[in-house]
Amino acid sequence: MNTAPSTPTLSSELKLLIEERNVLTTRTKLKVVNALDNQIRLDQLSKRQQLKAKTIEEIFTSEVSYLNQLEIAMKYFKKPLLESKLPSPDSLTHLFENLESVYNVNGELLNQLRLHGEDVAKAFIKVAPFFKLYSVYAYQYRHGLTALQELPKYNSKLDALIKKQETRPEVGAKLGSILIAPIQRIPRYRLLLKELLNYTPKTHPHHSSILDAIKEVEKATEHINTLVSDQENMERIIELQKSFVSGDPILICPGRKLIKEGSLMKVSKKGKKPHQIYLILMSDIIVCCKMTGALFGEANSLRCSCILPLNRSSIHPGAKSFQIICNPVTLTLFSEQPYTMETWITIIKQAILKEQQNQETLKRKGSYRHFRIKDINTLSSSVIPKKRKQLEDNCGVSDCHSPNKKNKLSAGCSSNLDSSSENDENEIKQLSYFSSVKKAISNFGHSLNKYWFPMYIRRNANMDKKLTN
Image (cartoon, rainbow, N blue to C red; front, side, top):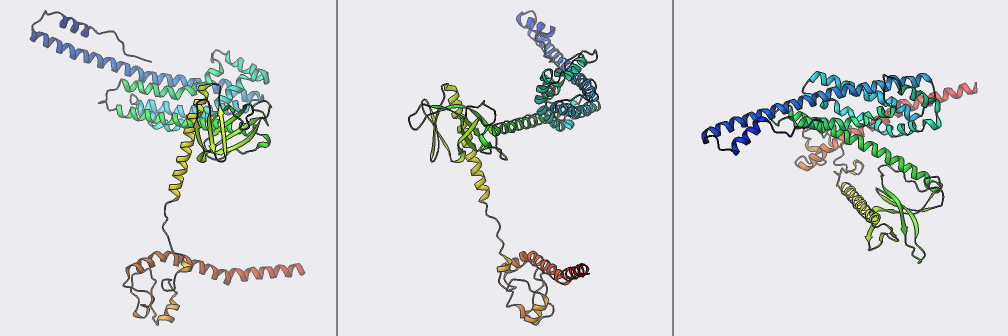
């Protein structure tokens, strides 16, 4: 990374010499010092411009070099492995497949960099949202690297082929060092852009766009880290689930996350010797487990003793132990290492507080009073819109309109609808939608009775005739 040189320039040395020695008159000295200050500022500006140009050049050259590494991985490793038809671990195959997606994203980034020239920030602003595709590669990388390291044990032929490709002069690197390049690339963009920002004055038109580019890259980085962390967390929950005797209880639940797990000592209520337990802290529950004696991590190695919901639990630290209380259960736990116990207390406190806050938020959201609409079936006949025929029979009026229109009803209908009441008019307007729905349902039922049921009966009758014949 480029850094500004700390050695003083000729102008600054000359200024220091003039200020130390009284060889000039005050007026002449002031002129010379001002001239030297201007020269120093120009020198600094020139140096910053040079460093900025070098940073931009490094962004271009490193991107070309990075794409070249990806091309090598696909040309000299992915393609030969597919053509060899040797059995390959799924994790390594998926890693190569995701590598091609990463290559396409960065190929577009290089095109945008060439398009915008010195305004490299615009290229990053446009392409950075697609850096989120790196999350799939980042998740597969750990599994792919593990499979690559285990090849000599389980797949010697494939291992020999990879080692042969690594010795080619066009490659000149281990496959592992090539595959890690995408993992290091996004953090590298952030460093290069921050370096570019340091050499760009705030008054420069590119300054704000560089800031925006840094934010976009940071968003993508956060997305990648969060997704990988969530996937790894879910993997660990699945592993713990497999460790329980008979697979009970079920830990896998939407939105549930593993926070901490580990061994602690439990104080017996009956005065017996403290025994080791395995505590699993999740985002909404605490699971206390006994170790069955089987190899930890294997099936049936853990037996669940109790499950405590965090929103009803409390923690009470003591001098040498702490209690988790969830009536009627009380767990008294301790660790021989004070730091371990303090860590558990702090993390459990935070988890309980967060879960209680989440529950309160859900209660507040659920307590909102919804807009009430009266049931159309329980309304009095005075406000239920009637059919025109019924209105004619009751009111003796031949032109009563729909109540959602603003036309006044005749005097004969005034007993049903009070046109002078503003509230009733608003209520009728609100019910116009429901009247239309009710009418549609009524018409649909009428159509069923008139058309569909007779057809259905005739069809069954014809079928019966065919069967009898």
